Image 1 (cartoon, rainbow, N blue to C red):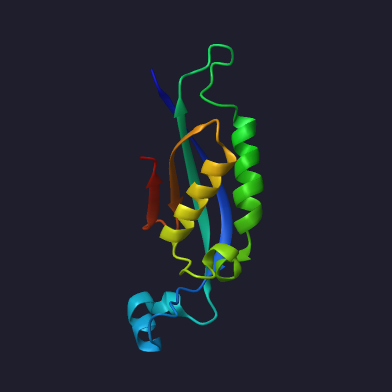
Image 2: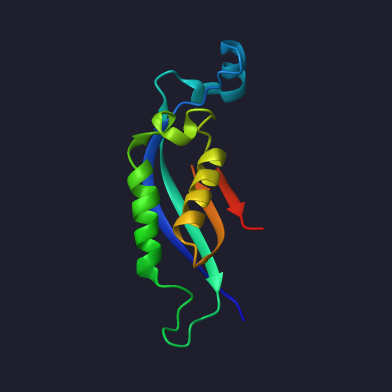
Length: 135
């Protein structure tokens, strides 16, 4: 039997959606107000879902301390209160929430090799959320 655990975290970050591959007019058309040269910010809600067998010794899918430390050290410390346009991952790609979600998934996959990472869900607003799901 497999069980799933989802843990929520929060962080704030800003970004400007702008592609060097598009003209100024195309950027305004594609990204609208999110193309503001001064950027804008979000209070992101991050959900990390892991799965596996419930350990007989602990009664848990995974050690919450390990999960919390990995998310804190590798995600929250990296992205909280940052302008995403200046983070190395986004030097060659637009810091959309889709790309941020993919980046977080890949970071956690490397940071938690012993834990099965099922899904990363990133809520940007009450109307927008994005998910990356394991294969």
